[in-house]
Length: 307
Image 1: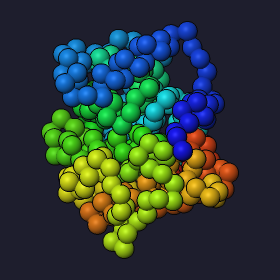
Image 2 (image 1 turned 120 degrees about the vertical axis):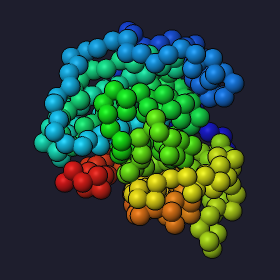
Image 3 (image 1 turned 180 degrees about the vertical axis):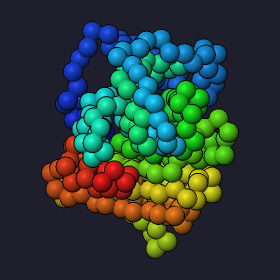
Image 4 (image 1 turned 45 degrees about the vertical axis):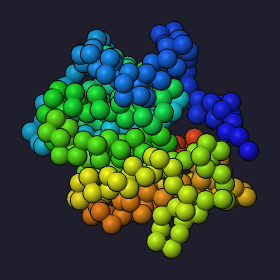
């Protein structure tokens, strides 16, 4: 009846390759915590955004209005989380090049790769202090989005977000709705998003359920904030919500319940131009395998207009 943090780490990091420049565990945890709370964020924001490193970086010329696709990982994620998503998107648009943007809690950026000149440049986001909850990921996005908009002169963007990255991108879009320094979210593919709790961390399998009106009977604080902000999102936006059910007795993807993942429909569907849901069932529906599933990738790339 408790959240299995060791199992979650094993599942989420099964494709991770350790590197010598990885931050220490103390760095990961301490700065991740600081990024989670508004008072400490004030001090982190005193450090200005800046690019500290380039690696094989180039910008291709473009003659069209660009809308980048941002790939966002979740708690304990990294480039390995969205690697297959990025690769398959590159295949779909017949251009394998992309820009990898790594950001730390102080706003230090590393750019690696290519900002392509086509209509949909691919940007893989990596949070250096990756042990980050939804609040910390939202903080990262609040630094990254205006910085990238200023660097590359775009007004709208698409997002593909996994796990805690999914509620984080929705929360960020709501918080900075109509903010001039922020681009507008026009499409988002949400994969295994916990919108009303994580299993055994505020959500117990088969206890909570969706009522007649579509909202969960038990709502956590984050979900209540989504309800309050439901009008603060672009009405022309489109959302694709993908979630998993491994078909055991829990009705979860091992870590996120179907109820928690589906609960965002009640908030977003009435406000948006398009809201779609796709449920993946079976062993490929496991939380940390969904983002690599061929069917999931195909559905996402069609939704984004790449196919």
